[in-house]
View 1 (spheres, rainbow, N blue to C red):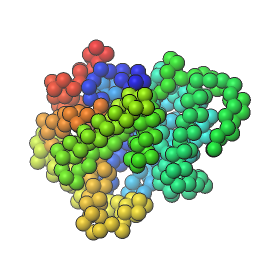
View 2: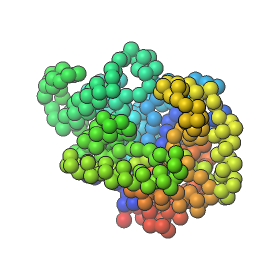
View 3: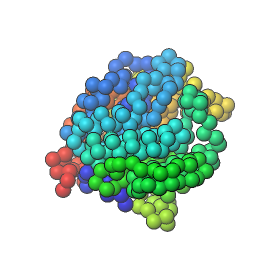
View 4: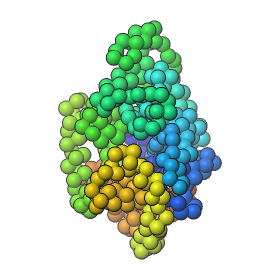
Length: 376
């Protein structure tokens, strides 16, 4: 296992902020006060992570908003330069860049990532993405091809990047890259590769992650309820870790969750319904589903998908009082997940309550240690 996967702590359940580099984060909502992804707020959030022992910050690689009334994710930061800025202003937290292999030439990407890694003294992480929204690729004039081709390209791209991190003065000729006399210095900080993750959901994507990455992000199916979804996820994780071992790898399993934490469950559910249903940007949600080709699904299934996208864009709802939210995160750990990337309606405004109320409960459960004892 890559030693960097510990992200500087011995916590059984790692926690991170997911998608704060994009406007609105994970809520496709028109409600006022939603996360705007202003840089100064981003710095505040990263420094809150540092102070409270949050292990990582994971961005979404986004180039174009989704339209509708809010243009969800219309404002976003390019993630390697964004990570570099945050790494310069923090001391502990691991900050990922989310990199599309079809858009970044490997020599440029490798140099950018090593630069970020040295800025952060070994705290940069790579989230490699082999495919995404066609409309975004169209902006670049890039045709990544069918699903199989995208993962062949991603494999070759990652192989080249790691060769650059390890070697000098080499040639490489593959299906996609023909490189001569490659030499790039410095190498990654401390002589170890940045921690690498992938969220491939298809069979090809899953295999790519298990063969190549230190961590695999996967969701929890909620159609049968949270408890049943956790049980199903546990079986998936066990099988994935066993398969990774067959490739000679130990991997971490991570997921994402949307947190709405209030003094009472009633308050949390009312707020969640307000921002994620009453104030949902349904025009944008319909755009998102149409982009995936899901707008032709049966009416009942389509409505379920619309509601899921409205209230957290697919993240597992972690709702209720501090006791409720802590119990839900304990369930995430019990299912076999090593970490969870969490999102808030407004990260900077809502995280302090989570820090003060939920983190101590997780510490008492033995899932985390106080920030002052993280290295123990």
